[in-house]
Length: 355
Image (cartoon, helix red, strand yellow):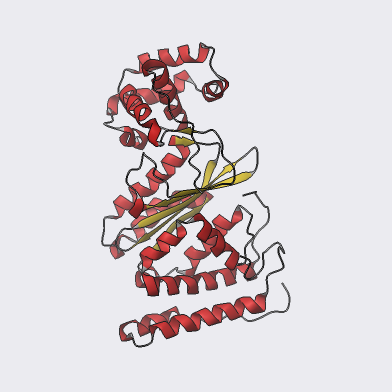
């Protein structure tokens, strides 16, 4: 998705929050909060969700804005819904652990397990999968019972295009082997993919190497940088600093990680460390890491930039009201939830004839 500049108009974002709220209430009320996680982990559903909310269908901002609207739409109602949203764009993403822990008293699981899932998802898409997209958005959505989903996005600074990564905890079998539920992108690249199934030997070799004395690894890395290598390898090794990596190798040597997941979890182990270990593994053990791209895979109210037509505010408000009535009717007869519905009610903003 291309980078589009500009901000979402307040009148549109307000409506996005309201409609997102009604849609979320309906899905959670009818199918439970876990169903919302499943839908958010589907890149096509999230894209359609953004289109229904009136945002640009082909802008990188659809991810950040829709996730932001969802977070704001249920603020203060998380306990009633059993659904929580943490993180966001830029600096907000770094507050994800503290936001998760802030909901700890409402959860039936240890929030630290969710903090771990959040950190590991971010670490894998920034270090174990090196596809040229730098993460700048991380939304962590979870339920009171501990189910979770991640929607995060990276930007390629050269092309100004974004790629979106989706995770679904209930479908996760391993953090370090084919962990993604889906990755949304129109183009395939040739990334260093240490979480591909075929990178299993490279992961094991990298873990073994991380337990070796730093001097041996630094010496091998220097040798690697002087060899006449294929173009892809030259690109991967040209910016590796043996001096800096030596300090990280000392830390991994002292920690003696048992497996690749624990190696990734060590503070300071980032893209360059993983890249160096992967390439040294190939040189020393002959086990090559994978370079396979893991990519797997509408206009209800118009779009913010006027395509395919300007947002129809009257129709938008009517959609909000229709869905609100539907949610209320769906709850009739369920006495124990009537008070919750009253708390979730709020007046529509006053209509204005100008932006």
